[in-house]
Length: 409
Image (tube, rainbow, N blue to C red; front, side):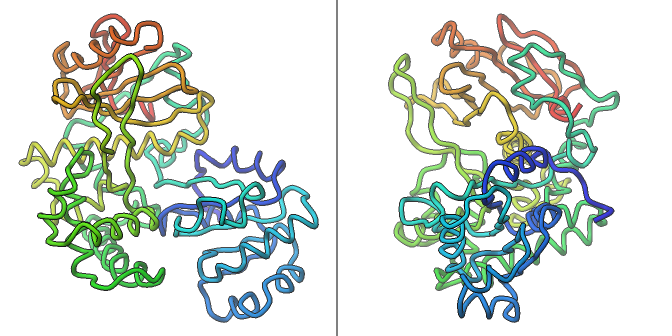
């Protein structure tokens, strides 16, 4: 507890606990859900431990009634029936701050069949950001600063390109951040192995770990890209139905995410395919067996690592951003125009971002942003080229180059 690093969502969670009867933290295993949740609990039940899960398997309603509140129900998927018991308890007594629920599986948490609908507020916890590591969690989120016109602060000694790759490979999993590079590689390799064997099997949808491993490798090699399903099928050697099941599985485990394609009635002929990501750049490197030197020699992989790393920093701020951003990507069907990240602000205004492994971006690097600005007119708030250099500078009307380090500056 003494070594706890404040997370960006901590104030948001505290507000929710004062207003809602139950809050659920979801996210990949080992991103710090239990560590964050336990600070808000009087009673703790770890449902992935057989000795503690027994009473909840037998009679979850009775088991809940014996506990002092707030109650932390850790790894709910160990006893899925506990969600129904939480629902019934809230129906009887909807006082705020009664339950904190954590889970490493997203599956079963959507649609009308989930018993927590309307009773449990879900919050995603992403990997730890550089901003959190540096204890700079106070102050507005990045997109709030852009919209308000706040000055963007860059650290006095920002990383160079290699430094950004090194930061990306340090990972967002709190338990490995302070380990030596060799020990961190060992932990990440073990994490991936358990992911494709134990974790996948635990939710009952794994038949062949070797095929899942190949599919994850295909996704890692194409992280931060719009890749056709056929490309993934050929690279992993599996059929379409198997691939669809594996992708849902990895999404449920929180390891793979996607940006939906953006659409607008002002633009025609945009692609509808999502942009897929492996959520942690260090996992990408681990799966592909790539170290810093390997990445620096491979321009395509370098771009994917930087893009994946930047998105992981921005994703963690979504829940705490006052402007309520939603993330998309954009590409037209002819490939003439594409934007890495299109951020809708409350469904009306747009901030567009390009992510470049480039220390001195030019107007050419912002040409797609300028094109989108001209198409959208007043809806376009700002275009940002996030780059690996040290300075903030203008690239035209409402288009600015911003160092990636300004995300935590």
